[in-house]
Amino acid sequence: MASSTARPRTQDDRPPGGDVARRLLDSAAKLAYDPAVEVDWETPLDKRFHGASPEWSTLYGTAYWDEMTEEQRRELTRQEAASVACTGIWFEMILQQMVLRDIYTKDPTGAEVQWALTEIADECRHSIMFARGAAKLEAPPYRPHRFALELGRAFKTLAFGEVAYAAILVAEEVLDVMQRDWMRDERVVPFVRTINNIHVVEESRHMKFARDETRRRLAGAGPLRRRINALVIAIASYVIVTSMVNRKVYANAGLDERRAVREAKANEHHKAMMRSSCSGLMEFLASARLLTGPALVFYKRAHLI
Image (tube, rainbow, N blue to C red):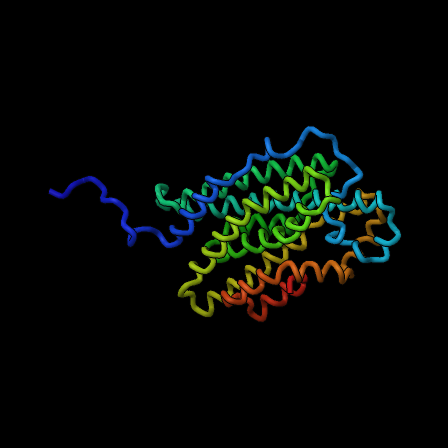
């Protein structure tokens, strides 16, 4: 009679991506943060500081920026940083649902599922951290516009495989570059610098996994599937990036909203900052053959390329 005891998992039995997941689990065990403890939530907001590096403001380099007082500039960057944080919460909620759905039927004793659960736990802490950070910046709870919210609702329900992981990668990579600047900038209020440092360190693991999963899921994909998914990823990227700064930040900073929106849309400096921040991401998407002609239309509209 055959033994009823399950045999040990061998190297050949392990799911693809398991080696990467095991290394990321080891990394998370060695270096992880608790924002409730690490971030200084008690010290009152010091309004002598910016909320983000001024060069990342959507109005930096415009005629309007030149007319603003230093106080207005600092208030604007605080409102913009809060808007980016709120958009981050929105997408992290989408991310968590996609990852949970992806691992729903997989082996929970495997490293891949355990890493996915670790990533979800990270994102829960990040969302709370961003929410508390936005509140401390004295900003309202910014939300993407209704159309983006409904597209997100559909995307989190329908996206799977390389579409889900590549979209996750886009959102994380765009945030990563700007936050690396903010966390080193002494003009930025200290508690925001701490938030950015925590996010950069922990998201570096998430980006590694997203890149690995995107490559793995695309292995053997036919040309039609690749073209369709490239377009879906590009549309999702466009919605994410264009939702980062809510137009209400300008009025809340005491500015003329219509003029600010008009000048922000024409701001070549900010467009150049976005393109430079996404050079590595675009190289990856190109190597994965996801920069098709139709996809490029949306990346160019979002000023990512």
